[in-house]
Length: 463
Image 1 (cartoon, rainbow, N blue to C red):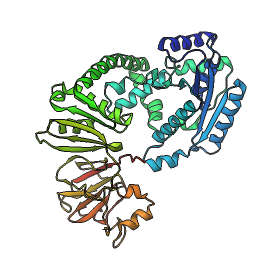
Image 2: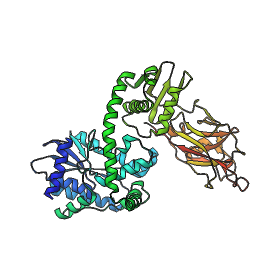
Image 3: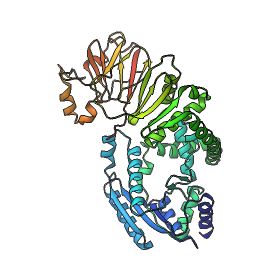
Image 4: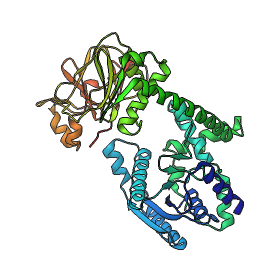
């Protein structure tokens, strides 16, 4: 036990995660990782800390969630540590924000931890991530198409978040708990294969280890190497940003002549830096978005604009490329675009519609539909809600007011005016992400034809 505690203390000192006497918020779920983190930080010889435990009840597992809350309350009491507890209906949050349960849970946790850190003037928020978590994170980001920054994995310290156990393996942590006689709670959701991380942990990583038994170590070595590279690239980006950009209260303006003189890979890093400076992170900013910005910057047309997720607008003129935070606006007025070929189309509301040829036999759904291009030929239009719009929902006879459909589905007004409508031959074919029309039905006549696959990725709405 002492050896492992010394190892963690050495890592804390090496990475300068926090100092003796600091107030540190400990994310305490009651699981093995957070229980080890709590016990180690509470018993660092010669390194006293003012610990505050923080537990968020996600309200996802009924009695089990209640049991977790009772467990952490009892455990914190044994350590004599102040405990902050809160409850968030993560399922409702996910539905309201259009997020997966994983994403919604993560957002809720981090918001809660930062709130507690602010309340107690904490120097840091300590999370129990370890080496195996790091390997899983690298694989997850690789699957999603991350670049060097994403593949460098989790940092020991990132803003206020610190990870004191990042050099330990899952086996080391569980061995420590057994030797120390520390009990913990097993979260049944950690084995739920509906979650991507669990599938990586229980399926993909064990499969990769049949090819390389040291797969975890290899992934971490890759992350460490890329992290070192990212430090250098980060400095280059910062220097280039100073040369090419001017920042305002809610804007970043690049001089196009200076911007276009920079290497293409560096330009994309500059776009990321501009977006991050405006919204604080790069959530929902994909490779395709960066490619669209680059296309706008390099276009022969002197003027143009793009709307990105979370209210970021990019405007091109003769001499500059401007990144701004666009204001909420009634997208029902104007904002129409035309779709005349396969490709990806950024919506005025910030969502994305992707169109491609498909021979698959899936049925039309909410976020993806399949259309017969002979029955519903290009060009299509995408617009927003207009007073008096009518719609023929799939599976029903006749039409109904689109307003009534929104009411029936309990779609908030803020979302109604931002919901794209796919129109063909002056008929609403798809209320994107909500309901296809009867004209989109796959019939025996068109079932064997090649079809167009149209997918809609909803943008997050700022409130």
